[in-house]
Image 1: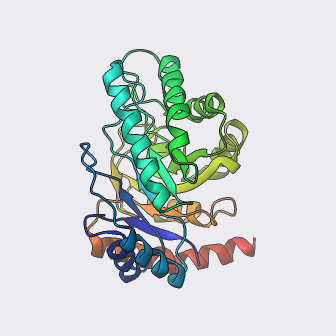
Image 2: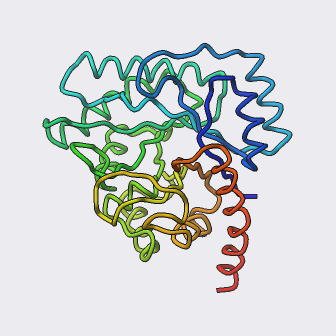
Length: 284
């Protein structure tokens, strides 16, 4: 069974998230490590984590994805902002040692006028500093849509960061909305996009997929998620990603504008049509 989940609230703990995921038909989930707009972090309880891990093993869960707050910026102009990002990420990674072997995803940051190359170097420098805090967690750079001064708007910028970090524990989370908005046509030219990703970054560095539709046309650089099948990528385009032989073994996380019942409907849709798409590919 493919690993498919959605974003859940950590407010009631890990066991509650696991039970909610099961109710939704998911076998993984994503959560924010702390308030996505701030720095407050709720303490984690080891007994709760142990109970979750027992549930996850019984239900065959895949790797879960911890998402860093949006406010972190490793390549800010201000040293105090960069320091805050490094300290927060190091703390997150240290706490994730309570759940070893999972993923930690973050938005690379915005260079705010310093230039892309400066941004790339500051992000890599920050990552090299924080990585020792969580030796059993893989850190993922998320592909970005390219709005404002975002770094990570194309495969070349992601590859440059990875090359400078020089660490196997750093990989990539591909967001379908972001790459589409960034100019990569995964709807009609998925094979070409993946070949380009492989040539520039390497498909071996791709560890997870944010499966989101987009409200925008390709190359809009706006980053506005849409429900599966209601956006410009469309259901067929996203099923093509879900079922591609180079991607289908990866974990998929929904970040569509949904409530929990909406997520359950989307997961049912993907589970219903995913096997059909895989079977069709197998007969090609």
